Amino acid sequence: MKKIGLLFGMIFTTSLFFGQDSIQDRECKRMLLFVGQELKMQNYANAAMYYLKGEKLCGDYGAKEYKSMSQTLRNSIITESDNARKKLYTDTLLGVYDRMDEKGFYEETESSKRATYIMMSSKPDYKKADDIYLRAFKNNNKFNDAELTYYYYNLYTLYTITTNEDKAKYKKRLISDYFILSKKIERESFAATTQASLTSYFNNLVRSCEDILPELNGFMSSLPADKEAKKKTVNNFLTLLKEKGCTESDEYEMLIDTIISIDNTIDAVLAKAQLLQVKKRFKESIGVYRDAIEMTELDSVKNEIMLSILNIQYADMNAYKTAYNTALSIKGNNRSKALLIAANCVAKTANTCGSSTFDRKCNYYYAAQLASQAGNPGIAAKYKANAPSADEIFSNNSPSSVTLSCWNVTVDVK
Image (cartoon, rainbow, N blue to C red):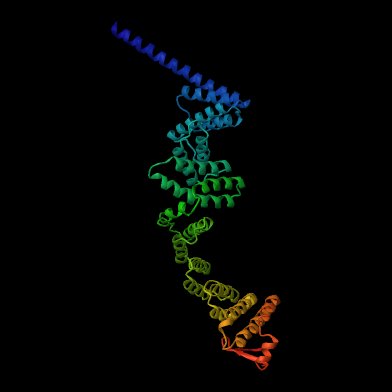
């Protein structure tokens, strides 16, 4: 009897189990049926509700059901006007994404959207959002304007709320990513407002030289290995330092030297010469300018560089005789500018060139002559007015010409 009772008990339990399984299976199918009906009427919120109930009743969804459920929840968010309910659907969607990730059904093409939904949730997990955004970049997700803006905003938020050693890491990423994303915005034709948003956050981070210069050594120690990528990175920092007024810093000079070491182009060498000029290291600047001259075969470029050398000699060093000789060597489109500077050099040294007052005043004849050749009759007339008067010419035996010892030229006296 005991055995018979045990047998009946097992049969009853088995029947009950299969009966419950059958009921659960029917309820699962019923929920999915309701999902289909609601989707036909575009009642996404109701469809999402039945999907969630079905997830429990069916025991486990496959990739197809999870993908459809996540899409339905996204549609629920899009069509919902109430912000509180919108956040509720967002939180629910994020839970679905997490379960899909755990089960191996998650598609990385959703990462830029998923991370942005984290930012739009009731309690944003900024670190998790950053991790998923990085997955999106790694998997070449197609970002839209909102997603790109949210990515950079999230990174900025992490920087502002972080107090440990990770703060420097976030600052470094904010600076380097600004340049990377700016190129992406330009290349992929994002909205102008997206660039404006990124620039706003960036300028809050980097307001002055003091905000960037201490970080520069860290950046320089981890430059990309690829030559072109390295060059772009360094040029980006050069642009940044220019914008923040840091061109006189040692760090700016270091960047210039780095560019020259990476790719010794004439543009990089000219930038170094300009920097040395700004730093009032004039002789060094002229030396680097002369190096640049040796790097080109174009006379037009050589004459442009010579004009830069001339300006240093004349305006910065007050080396008028040297500047005069440089001016006379310049040809081409800059010839007139150079001759006018030569005229000024002659005029500025007039009082020290000549053994008598009359001789010294005769320098102005030459200054006027050079200014006239430069195509500047106004300056020529001004210098001519300082030349000897008729009485002074008569008092000096009315010579027809005078040789100027400083310039080794002979000028007509008239």
